[in-house]
Length: 199
Image (cartoon, rainbow, N blue to C red; front, top):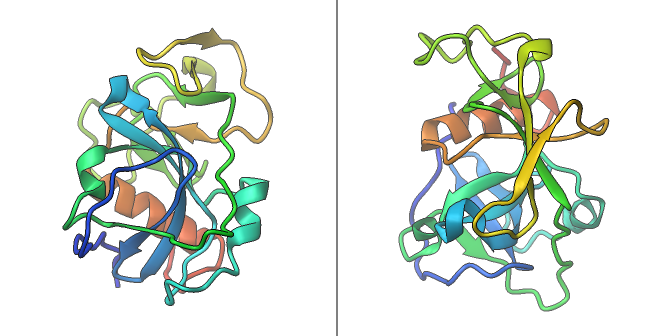
C-alpha cells in the first residue's frame, strides 16, 4: 500500500518552534519536530522527521530519537497551512516531551527537489521534469552544495566545497506532497519500519 498524507486534523494549531507533532499518513503517524517557523522567508516551518512510525498517537517510544536527531529523511520546509484544521499535523501534548534540536546549518544541493533512493537524499536531476520517480541524477562531483543558517529570514548562508560527514541533504525549496510521500515511504522501507519493496 502506498503511503499518502492524511489531511484530517480536527483542530488547527499555530506551529511553534520547539514543539513536536505527529504527521498523519495512511500507514501511521510519523513524529516530527518543528525547529523554526521562519523557513522559506517566513512562509514555512522547518521540520525534522524522526526515524519512526507509530500507530498509537500516545506512543512515546520514539522520544530518544529527538535528542539524538535521528531522522527518517532530511529536514523539510512545510507550508504553515498544513498545521491548520484539516491539515496533516497533530500536536504532541505531553508536557514532558523532549524538544527538537535544530542544526546550526541546513544543507542542500542546488536545485534539488527529487528524492534519490540510492543516497537517501534530495538531489538535482539532469532533466528539468523527471520522466519518473527514478530520475537520472547529476553526479555528486558536479553538484553545488549550499547551506542556510538556522532560523534566518530572509535566508542567510552560502556555498561550500563539501559538507560534514553524515549531512542530511534537504530539498531546495517547498515540495509537492507526492514527493514527500515517496521519500517517506522509501526511507521507512530502507530502515525496515514497513514491509514495502524499495524502488
